[in-house]
Image (cartoon, rainbow, N blue to C red; front, side, top):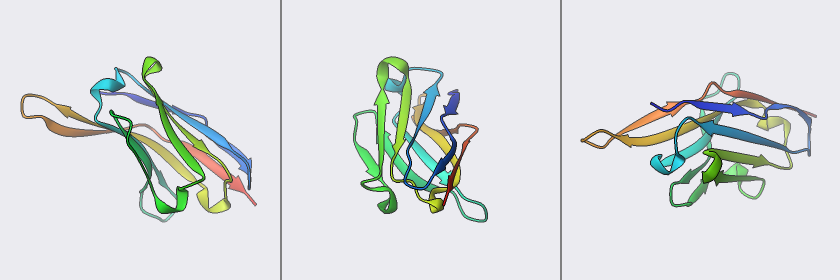
Length: 121
């Protein structure tokens, strides 16, 4: 089991920045991939960015160049630095972890409770 706790959301003006944090309940070395998703009202949840245990990153096209995902292994925490925020970035942002578990190495996905990000125009 992995518990994920997000923090850092809030209200910011367009063009501003926020940094989200996701603290895991165990060593993130044991987690294959950690990432951030978001869900705006009336829309499906979508990938924002993710990072593997080896440090490889992936971004959704609309976030490239504005958002940066990083990890602090000592703190078991993954961050999402969001710059040049736009009103369309308004959403609930969820942290997730994909972890291979058990003798069959079943990939299990965990979610945090989400943190609201609101960007005003």
